[in-house]
Image (cartoon, rainbow, N blue to C red; front, side, top):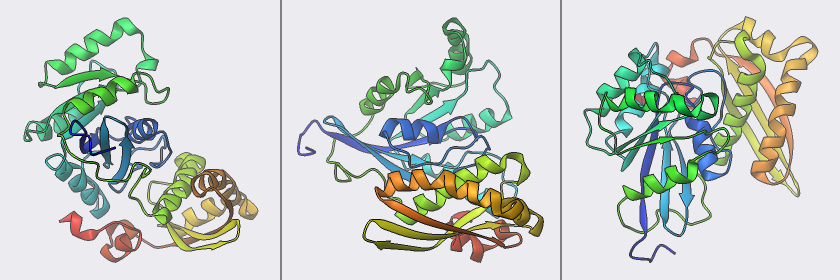
Length: 302
């Protein structure tokens, strides 16, 4: 398929303030759930590469952590990964919500975008939440801030206008062969995706009770016949958090496991026997050793 001389392939990053729907959009574009979504900001911690392949070309999406002001080593890591990506890709998708207000977070992103020569497509997400006639003033507000190659309104949640977005991206990709086989959807190790799916369910079910400081470590994934045995540990920063995650008589931990299991079974295409544990690792987000243990490379913090 990629021997076609008109075939295009390249790297595209999704940036935007935390919680604008980057992971939801990426899942929608590739048609499979890889990145976790949550109503808490800063859900995505690593760069996640996912792959969209068609007859026309291949787009490798690099989902980055949201760009924000860092508060600890993990925060620095997330910001540096996001900002370094901007000059390494072929196209930048900047996701914003429909609004006339451009706050400090958006202004910080505009400053970063003005430093690079990469084509920028402004994606106004969540258009299903506003009236159509309200969109033009929002588009105008952003158009006055900087020059965009394209401005595309979409609803990541409902899949509205995502085909148009794919066509716009293809315009700016270089010609060349595919980077991945056509059936590749992500370069993430399976263990990491499983860990992220568990973390997503924990974040959703715990809501405001636990601050953002949880990680999930997969201790074991063992395949036998039609079942995969998975042992995973949810890591939190305080003893008081441990009790909340376990819940009365283990009720919350059971709920997290029950919510995560169907997604993991869909991913692995087999039955899953999931065992969850909870451990306290104080201040893990400021420890190079523990961050590395949970899949974040401390060298990227520098």
